[in-house]
Picture 1 (cartoon, rainbow, N blue to C red):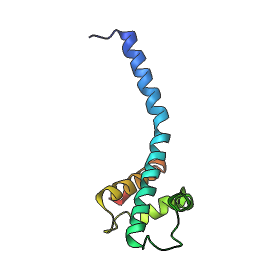
Picture 2 (picture 1 turned 90 degrees about the vertical axis):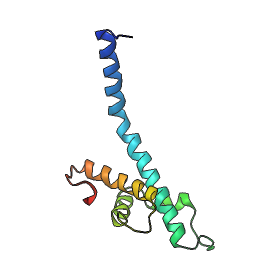
Picture 3 (picture 1 turned 30 degrees about the vertical axis):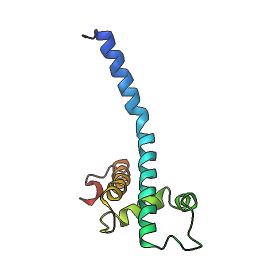
Picture 4 (picture 1 turned 180 degrees about the horizontal axis):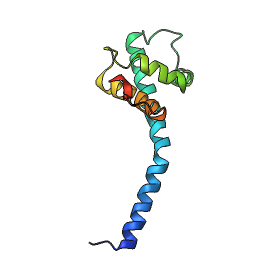
Length: 108
């Protein structure tokens, strides 16, 4: 089916609007994924059966924002991270670098 010029322009405007509103939700989703990855790493490194082991929600609340970025940068090339965890951690670092307009994203 061939689209008319008006239909193409309308589709372009919809796509442009979607891209303009999506980065915030994408950044939040990346932060959530990184927090979950750090939680999994934390549980592997520490004994999860300890009585004073924090709940995920409490633990996550401490590390959102700048602290999350700092921790992600520290663990960027940690050999204890699984490939999925490393990917989630790297996404947060790349978003932070993009927001700060750094050229060499993630130090790679």
